[in-house]
Length: 358
Image (cartoon, rainbow, N blue to C red):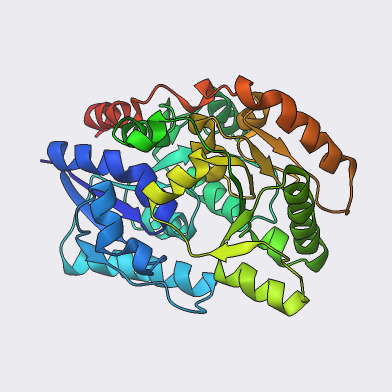
């Protein structure tokens, strides 16, 4: 039986890989490696139990308070190869998903002769200030198999002369989210639309006082317009910058990060979301919840094109986008199209491709 190694380390990626993990366990000798990039309680037994993810075979513990990106990427590259050698692990392929620091270790693995696969390949924002943009480009260049969510992403790879081993499979989140929605009665009732969610955690936003201040001011303004409370997801670095810049949150309530079920329920019942997260442009589309994206670029333009989200320029306060967002929210909610995410058979497609390719 062929051995397949998966390397995953952050909450969103465990969620997106959860159905793939289960199928890999049935069809291959699957070795699940947790990098430890996210190390808090939401990746404890409670988190894995909720998604029915089995315990990882190895935890490399590369994360930690204040540990910088270069330390994480260097430690992971060394730890992975040493683990393979010490445990005599000889994978037919090493699979990564997404654009976290984990995927950069594809360089070292490729140099050592290992095959690499990248799920969520081909995404491009065009903004190289984003650490994630560099990560995904590096991993795509090193990968032998590239699983893309949409035909548009295949075309982007083609422009970079990456054409071999590329497969359009749809988005992994669809089957995960739809299973949760189907099995939870809360999603069968009419949404309450009784709050707004704010999620800001990208360095290109929180590292610049004017952008972070504008996002907070916009949120307070639109909250007053709709007369709805705002809950802001707590990210340590964002919280620290708010304090450093002396930004007044007003009535915005900061809440701890939620479990996946609780987060999805909150998204379902929110009027709309303000988020700079890429993945937050996906689940809300499946739940019919609109998203305002305070960024100048997105690696998921299909979300904007299919009326799931709207980009807002936060370089200046009180820009035209602020008023345009009100018009958009008033007219688009019932016209969200989630077809761009795929048909919910992604994990099955990936397993079949692996069987036929290895």
